[in-house]
Image: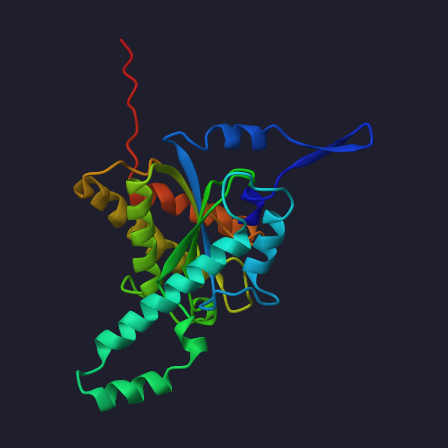
Length: 258
């Protein structure tokens, strides 16, 4: 996924130069055809070791962003908003009894107030990435999504994906890149039948979300790019590719010869 964010460089006359893709992305920053990307992240907002956000932060630091605050500054603002939102959720969930409210607040630590729920997402904006203007950080339980157990269409991560598509339609995000298997890496538990079932589920949900776009009365996300892990077998990839026309039932043209 981060390959869509990394700036491509080339060496010429002992100088490292950025490829023209960066200029093209920058020129479309204020257009009505923006590009978004879905990044699967843990519940914690702050950067931690061996976290994909840490790797993403290093990509953002390769060049200066002159249009938007730095990634760390945006995360700090998001953390404040998450804390306020969790406090509001906690207050709404307790009774009006003052003793109950005091007990609830004392049991809730500051660390818990800074955690997101599965299915939540937050947005960061960038002008210094290769092919992406907006990154949707979708909060997931990575261990649950990687396990051999199946998920259903009612899973919180899929609801979060639906809400991301809705936000794309509202804010001129016409191209969205997302992980097809709802995971960035492959593990030994991910057998070929598991991959096919997960792909079928996600594609069917996406089809339903795209049909729902017509009822939202806003612009549509016209292009959705599906990304699979790098270490996926070629044979499995071709099987996944065959599922796309099967589920979406793409129309075929008929050539008449007179």
